[in-house]
Image (cartoon, rainbow, N blue to C red; front, side, top):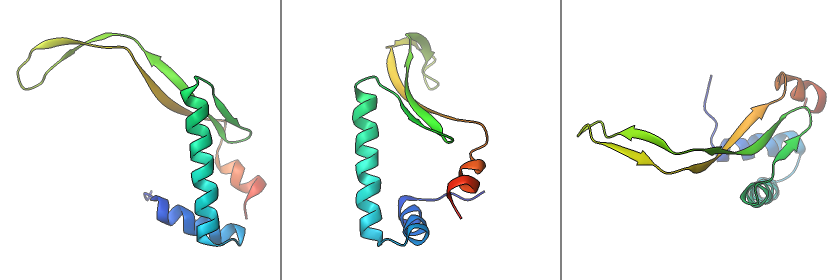
Length: 97
């Protein structure tokens, strides 16, 4: 398994779509901004045959500082999660090359 950074992702998407890297970068940035705005409003983003992004609320919990052993209460917080639908590889088979 290899890690793909944004630059590699943009080049791959540009190759697959036939668009320039700059055009793909604008589209990806617009997508990420839209997803971020929707999640900020506590919504969820569902991409059929791929997965969904949603906000998860984690409650208060007791934590421990590993250096001092001191216990403290971590405040509740929101986290973004992604859940894949079925086999994400099928998305490539259906829409990709």
